[in-house]
Length: 236
Length: 158
Image 1 (cartoon, rainbow over the protein chains, first blue to last red):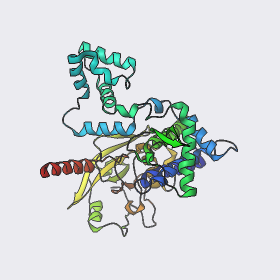
Image 2 (cartoon, rainbow over the protein chains, first blue to last red; image 1 turned 45 degrees about the vertical axis):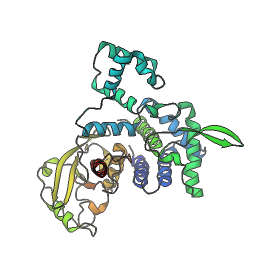
Image 3 (cartoon, chains in turn brown, purple; image 1 turned 90 degrees about the horizontal axis):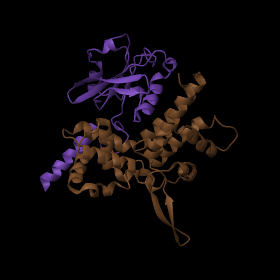
Image 4 (spheres, each protein chain N blue to C red; image 1 turned 90 degrees about the vertical axis):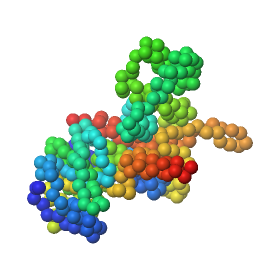
């Protein structure tokens, strides 16, 4: 790695660090600093396109597949912390097991929109064979059952929405804050990684529109794409 | 302890200064950076792929206590040959751990010229105001205690 590359990366990480530090003081500033952190790397990579185009292209290029398949990192962190401080083991899965033994498949009805068909079948097999899940898998099931509402389609982004959402972040959060002095919308301060779809009035009709992702959701997006860039470009 | 001279800055309180000056068992064996933190880490933390941060206990006097985290940076990383290493390391740690690390020079051990005495012996600190995981859920130990305390107080009132 050249000194020039190193300084560029450290500048980007410094902006990321400042975003985390300033979050308790001003969410708009913190959010905009995260955008700048990505901007710092993306502006050197592409030709003479607009900064917004470069920002969107950078994240789309380097965001790893695990971003879409991974758990909500804030909720996961919370669960692991609770696991580490509580002497008792959380028993959501056990409670479903008891209900399954009593009511059969009806007990799993509420999970149909949350877990895939394969996952439900696997859960049934586990309950019927009375086997215990491996620890990691049990943690994952517990987590999804605990925070099922975070994994609904109306709470998480889909890959085909990424471009529009990133453009929205650049214009409605970053530019609005830096150039217009406006704070980001309420959805930016959720405690988990969410980007809910909400009904909005537009020209007398109701339009379903996805809100700006929460700071934590975009933090993971920025973190994962910068990590992807470092991993791709500077791997040993 | 390796050779260095320390400078006390205005913001460093008398009590904390005494704590920082106290001999710490095992530090001389580390040959690595030491971070002062307000929260303990129960387990070793993997930062990036080859930087390991381990919890080394705590030191303190009176009501002031700090937790020691030791980071052993690999010597083959050229980033550690860069000036302003403490700031750079704070950035890297913030990014790696996704938490709020600072490297305020007020808390670094510096020589008389204001430079770090040795590149590998640096002192960082997690600011108490911003320390802890990123979530605003109170999931740092102090936060959890406060929440439980508040809950118990609520039960008492009821």
